[in-house]
Image 1 (cartoon, rainbow over the protein chains, first blue to last red):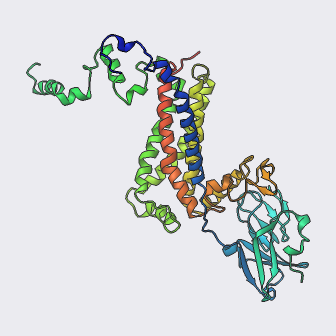
Image 2 (cartoon, rainbow over the protein chains, first blue to last red):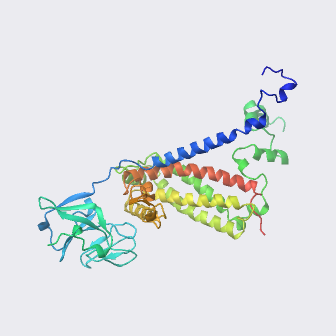
Image 3 (cartoon, each protein chain N blue to C red):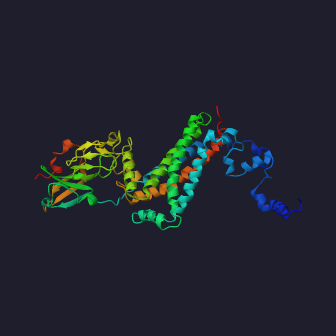
Length: 174
Length: 263
């Protein structure tokens, strides 16, 4: 190791790595660097997806069925994004989210329809889509009478298509 | 003229160490010093030392790239000023935007920021139209075209994230619509094509709690977390990337042979 600054220091000896041998180990460094970078980027991506949300509960009590007259009831539109609709077959809970791109339609009593202000989708009182770009009816939430006889709406369960409307979990027969 | 006091002061000034430490070349009155003036300046060196005659002809370039950069500077300056008053919270966001117009001196700043943003989108499109029609995307400039396409997308994202900040009905529903489009991303959005295929047993890998829409909104619905997320993206994250890419974009114009000439 103890070499004089001049002469033989440039000539590789048995105890010395050559420059080429030294560089030939760099692939370990590159693999370590790539794996570490990938891991950090994955973690940073995960960082953007929170574990705890401070959003509303997904179910609520809507009061006694006797409080509702025939037609569309808008009292839970702002607070729970839900219309309680009483029709000839029973009471069901309609989502206020337009199935086109998620705006909130307006209930127009004079025209007996829901009309979305964003792109003009129209729905009947049953939630069935009949005009505009909406691809499917308004969703219906699970609805039942709880022990105290009040309506309980469970927004975590929803049906998307009209052929599921007969499901007893999604309508209160009257 | 030698005894002109201003002239001798000027000459003395150029002899000082401070002056010499900043400008490391002589007066740019000859081709060599003119080149050095550009090359030794960190801002100017992005630009070619010499420009073709066609490169400064308005009818050829429309100056659209330059106008886009000018508007980006306007947006940066007005944006920084607006940040002194705007608070991205449910309680304050809407009222702060009103206050910026009604109560803050120079209430027109927010309008300049808004109209500048509209104008920048237009000039970016016209710039790309010019580059396309003059064939300036062809080799050796194809890499810079690629950079430009990324800058176009980032300009759109700047507009999209800025759209939410006034926190009015238009903003909330526009971002609702945009986020629902995100939910239709193939394999990454909960409503997107192919997403249903990504499942282990009965468990969906991509659901409303981890899809593209969730990442965009920081939740299932638009809320305060969304407002903060869009604010940070709009004011810090995207401008940072855009600034970096603009520097590369300008530098590549020089490296790829300057502004293209007429065919």
